[in-house]
Length: 154
Image (cartoon, rainbow, N blue to C red; front, side, top):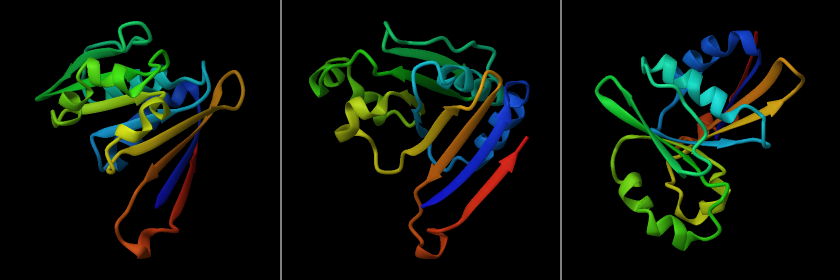
């Protein structure tokens, strides 16, 4: 497992999103963090880095929002209100996982048993009013890469 950590000011979020995008090795990204940590805000910056003209909004009530990027789509999920795996099956989560489109999942622990093995994880921590810590966890298959860690500060 490889972990890349970024500490950034909110004014630098677009640069951080572009850097994170370069490190992603999976199109399924799990977003972890407390309520209000900035998960949707970071997803919005990722969309911008992916050249989307869409603006990310929290799909807390709709459960999934769809955004367009050049030659692809992004499905943005918020599982905060999902109470069971059956609810996820009822709205067709398997179809999304098999779609080969980008999947950004907030509150993924609510459907942990369904998550693809190749999913990468982003954990955002609110350090203070204008600073965040972001940890990108990349699962690797090679033992030689398991302990690598990089820290980037802005």
